[in-house]
Length: 380
Image (cartoon, rainbow, N blue to C red):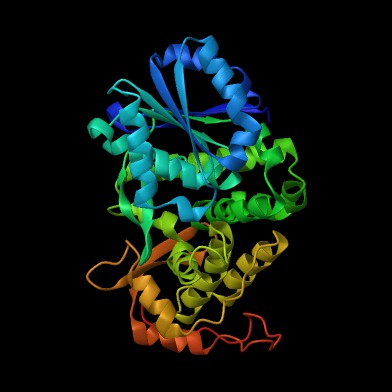
């Protein structure tokens, strides 16, 4: 496979392209011209990414006659708060941004969520472009129009659906990604195989050594297929009223663990990696899948180098954190449970059942794996 391809997100008048091209960030003139990017452009990034890519992007924008305003944020999940949005809006207002002005989100998922939300609410909406530089952002968060910030009680509780004008993916940016961030990004890629494509899941199983070595052709396949699956799901359900909820697999428990750790002990992909395994284990406990499904998921998560064991939080604390998730409906936690690799279904779970499942988890330092018990058969 070549390192140049395009995926379409079909949403009527809000449709856009995902461009996947090696070296794209070094040749933006054509894209700027086609999208009529002119006047003022805010480039939102963080300090880490700025050190690698901001200068080159500002030079290109200046060469094309664009008045670029860099907006550099502290790195990490803790920047995802309303104070950061206020600071971005202050910069835009001081520089007299107009409705035709653009925001560029240059960075990972945090930067994309923040910049997209600021674009959604400044003068009731200005255009923005996602330029993801992490595996999580390239394979998942830059696509679909979810923007927002965290609240102290839960992740992503404040935000808006707001689609970008385009997504520009340059796989070469992944070469500068720290190992921990790279491994964390594999969780979202694995998720897509579990929820929608058994063949892709098997491909990831075979090619995991190459993925860990960041072999360009294998990375390109992983990123493109992830984008294709997400584009299909988003096109069918833009605002998460039904099918799009399957994208939350691994995130119900994952987001709760992030919140309990105050976004410090686990980064997003690590929490999702745990969620992929543990939510499959819950599905087995509920009788939704066979133990072999859990074992396959656990094996690939471990092969990727992701954590898979639950931290030692009590069931009550985890459940309370899960109740603050934005997918809670009518006071019930609606989970996404794998029935087999490539197919999941949504089903609520109540607190007593969750606590019963939590009691079956291995004790600390027990050395036991998730193959410990037979599934409890429950009515579907």
